[in-house]
Length: 430
Ligand SMILES: *Cc1c(COP(=O)(O)O)cnc(C)c1O
Ligand SMILES: [Zn+2]
Image (cartoon, rainbow, N blue to C red; front, top):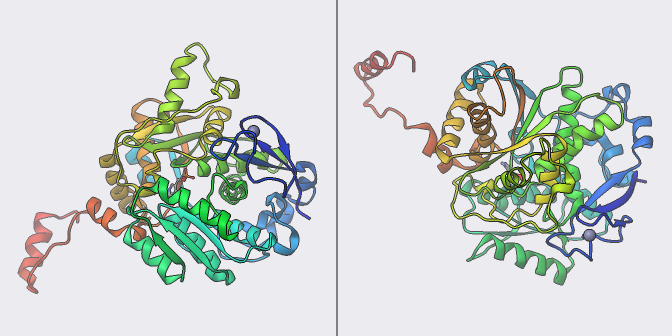
């Protein structure tokens, strides 16, 4: 048995039991997102620092805090437990005291989304589903296709036209049935939901499926464990739909609730300035309550409205209508954190810097977290003493065109030593 007690609507607070609902019927599919609650006391009885020492080096090590029955929770795997990489040279370039990068580009399909998709596929099997589906700008789809292929489940994917070729190649290589929609991401998303309802496919779409955030939560559980006695001040995530930052926050919070740690960080959410509906909402909240130093849940309006007009080349966070706005904003509010924007040029600079100064190749949406640290430093949100953990949410190989637009070109020469010498002399630092 899982230790799930209830599913609570994040908007109206109504409780549902497991299996009763995937969304709150009173609040509707766009607003009535559920949040899974656990018997934290029982979880803490067996999930301890001591018991963790002997467990699998994957995200399945946290089974007490996953919404899966024992028979469907794998005991072993190759997703999660990604390294936390010290990045002193990048920290110096950004003007902060310390930076550690959580390198989630090393997951099985190359992104943070593997955490969610693996829990989704395990939950699909638990519910008896025989096919899975999702709509995605890329990584959610490629990770679902990977996890479905690994489990032997057929997989249906709805992508929009902006999917980068690396991610598309992954989908096809993993054998998914891919629908590339001639239309917007919104239309792909709606069509996927209709198809799931019609064919009975398990719907991986992260915001309306509360089980997915539980997978993303493992990113926060791992940060808490890896930094247990050496906590950061800030944890930085790039933000699209908002599920990732919400999950990470829930993870670090639960590790404190069960007593494995005694701290929580402030959460910094980063968006690209062209598509930044959550930063806008966050700023509006602060302007609405200028005398409140730290707004709380009570300050969130019942109706959230989004405005964006621009664009960004960071496809994974190009989300004009975020599906999990409320959970994301709650993470920022509860942690006394902040939202910040960065430009596409700054994201390109962050791709370059991260590669050169740490050896980690980040896709644009992943480098956005690093660009956000620079912006937060400039705006005085993080100071020079800042001790920061940033999630690198996707591998740079997923979007080669995006990377090449940031990192420059090779020296094209004839096979002659003279040519090599003249370039080395003009550019001694390489
Ligand atoms: C999905 C994704 C994000 C953002 O996660 P949300 O849950 O949509 O906020 C950030 N970076 C990468 C690489 C992603 O794939
Ligand atoms: Zn509700």
